[in-house]
Length: 329
Image (cartoon, rainbow, N blue to C red; front, side, top):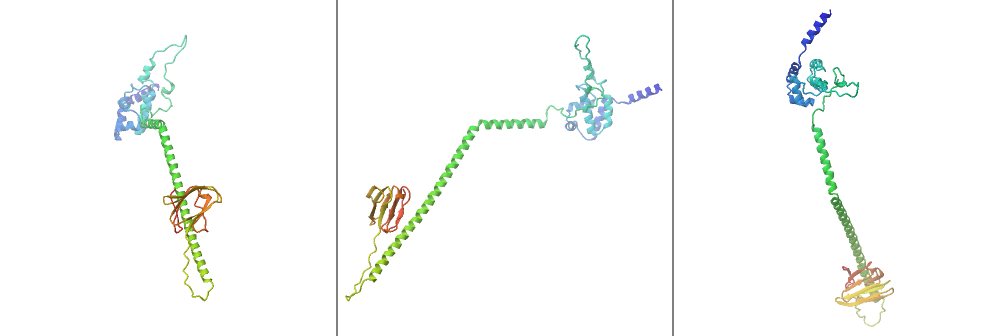
């Protein structure tokens, strides 16, 4: 009975294919799927030279049994030929793997008297180990890693450029902020000047309207006086209407103010007045009047309606008809 078992085992052993035959079967399975070595290398992340050695049955160049078994298992799983993996598994063992046999012949250095040093490979490399063989990461470089390196270099270059030009960038930002602030101040001043001009124009219109009303009131009073005069037996004389009073410029001071009055190129008055001072100037011709502190004086061309020319230094031109025109300072 023992002889029968030994004969069956010998027949089964004779049926096992060699590594080159298994490599040829693996190549046929790859070609049946219309895959080239480059396609298989891209799909498994295994270099082409290793794939060529596997299909040729050359496993001498593999550094360890674990790499050879892992590469073969990855290829058989991808090509869906598990029966080939079972045959490879029985062939790729510690006994017939030449690199490991060479490793067993490596010199042994004694650790001391009576010590023993094992020359067996690690347990992860022995036959029958259940440790999963690595299937990826055997390429020396990858596209993803190169992209990450390039991206890091670009980021470092951008940071370096920013640090190198930081003073210039900060100065440019400061300059832009200063220009924006200056523009805002100019716009605000222009708006205030426009509002002041509008207010002055309204005040001048009010002054002209008051002067006109005063002249109309004087004319009405003169007409009423003529109507109320007593009648006599003497023949009625034709009474000519009284000429309207000529406008005159009256200036009153409520505080200290520098004053200059000019008629053409002739200076009529140039002095500093105080509170209580008052003087009237005939408007036979236009008068150019400059007020040093306009808020401390009031002006009237009809003798009744007094108004301030404005705050600070002001300059006006008064016409013979009582109209007032503000001039540039």
